[in-house]
Image (cartoon, rainbow, N blue to C red; front, side, top):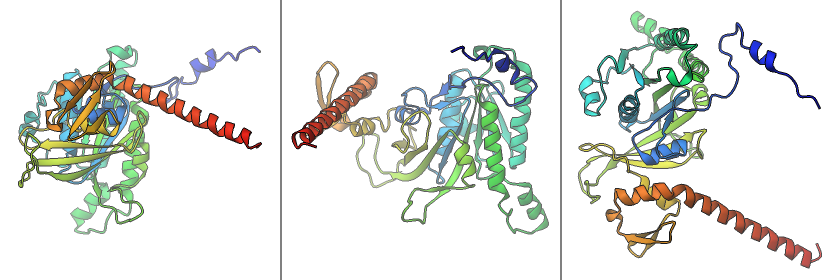
Length: 367
């Protein structure tokens, strides 16, 4: 059978049509969250984290670490990779001293900080940027284009024109549901614009405790439309950290424990949970939560009051939990893919043996 010749159709389909492209836009550039366990839970890789060309949302309670990760770690790591960052602050809360303390470079050639209060303003900022970017770099090879990360902190504080008009008139009746529609339109347009240009958008948003006993997960404000449009959604919950730097229990609160549930991801298994310890004095350890993840995967097993790890070469390591250091965790990360492949192969063999046994039993019973 003669194959269909699509060369002319492929060439003509996008001619004169804005917003249409041919081919796949798989993420090629990623920004680390600053934590190995969270990177893996989101992307399936310990070093990748958040993809450019997509929309990612961090949603959680106040003080759960959203801004720390989005406006702190992601901005710093994007800058370290040579990416330019546009940081849109709707809360008037991101001070230069706070960002500098998180090793963010606030110089104008590395960071554009914009204060915006309205959804329409954010939409215009991004739209105007994309028009200029496309006009400037349309003929530039992908590898040579500048890489840009937008951060909007936060969606929940953005206003609609109705909010502003009512406030100025002294009438606080609410915006009649306009905000969820506006946020939905903002995110959907960004998803369509960013795909082929290696430009990413990370948003923070607020959440509140669920009152539904059958659906206990925290609810994200602003409606469901823009949640569906986002590629990655992380739900964050704040708990008290009552441990010192050596892991000993204390009566005082020394930081937060941020429980992060991966509500949506297209790059790994969703609904995994990572708990990160963020001490106020030292900040987030890149290895935080990693041992818990490896223990949940069965790579570390309890042996008395110690944890045992069996390396790929059969070597056994037994240590108390507090003695497990970064060197050992680095080795486990390196061997992790092979361990997972072996576990999956063992499961396949087990299922095949069980099926064969069932078939044999059926044949013996004459079925």
